Length: 207
Image (cartoon, rainbow, N blue to C red; front, side, top):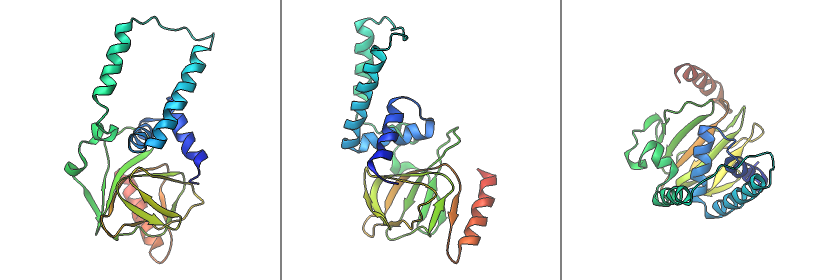
């Protein structure tokens, strides 16, 4: 489920303003890190802007040229700052919570039904084979990881549905830090699957 179509749909939904807080942060950070995706996002914004202008049912607000200038200057002044950094601060100052050896998490205080987390995996650390009841979104912020479907480096995203099972493994050189969104709980498989699913179920009561 990692084709161009599903990625472009995410970018389009962000450009149209139809995403919730968690996915908006995810998408904007993706556009910030990935220049190719950013160009696609700009094309979508221009397309949607043209549609708005040509929509006779939409009344256009009268703006002074100074309003446009101040808006542009404000956007450019923050162009070197990641959208995620504005929410959680610098990655090297995050207070991580260890889930198991070599695997840490940080959950931003965000009011949204989608669960957004930062994940830090030490070099060579893996996540047991799993899938999700809903979609899973992963954006690599630093380092890289690989699974049964390929290798993902800084600025890459992976979008999985309930039909995808995978075993992410952090690169052996630098590990990885990822931004992740899960719409539903994780479902684990293998020898420890039942135990991990029970652990996930119990954790859901303390979110």
